[in-house]
Image (cartoon, rainbow, N blue to C red; front, side, top):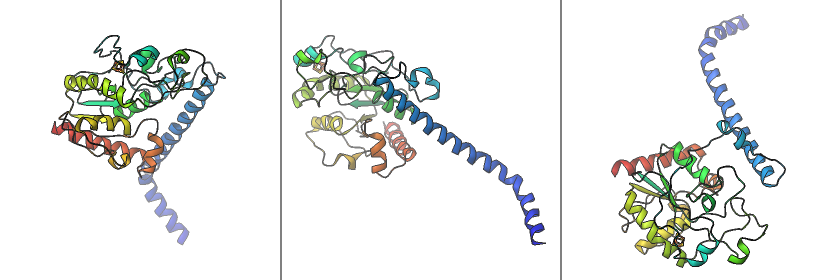
Length: 291
Ligand code: SF4
């Protein structure tokens, strides 16, 4: 008797549960497929770099992966700038800013990496001449900004030429040390002198774009902007996604994690990936609405 009652109750309730089961099943499947694709993507990238695979997955199936919009213009401020002679000697290209000059958001990185000249598309600013066009930094930060509704952000770097950690005479040679983006020469942090010299270009860009918010990616990009106010940071991670006034530029800064460390540090800061994006969206929407 009890069994018959339970069965009848199930028959009555089941039709209502079907949509719920369908939706939760779909979401679970979507998350699993996304994770699988991400792992395959990383694996194929590693194999490609090590020469065991002729083409990485992202080049074969870009529609399966998150491929943010690739820039097609560059904001050249001083062609063949040689204000830093040693960087002019070792760079391949000056990595100029990219994006609309009326963008509400200006994203600032530290400096271009050595890049990956063998890559099909995301070779990096040192080879493309456009900021944030490397696979491991450009794709990640562009994907983040697009996912929160800012597909039209302007991207640039505090220092626009690749700072190698070896002398110019060796940089064009056959060093096998991989760079941050898969190139042949690793890069170092820019010096204070290089940051100060190139800061005039950065200020020019901010004056041209007049963004509502500046998004420095990582500690060093944030610090170089705060230098304009003669301020410094103690504990960068405490300031992530927290607006900071920058009087010299009359524009608030909204620091985000450096794309190379984004995935690790999102969790360390106590966010789920979606929560981090949501907070970024809220803060940017607030700053841009206020602008
Ligand atoms: S880093 Fe900036 S200032 Fe120095 S040479 Fe390159 S573009 Fe010119």
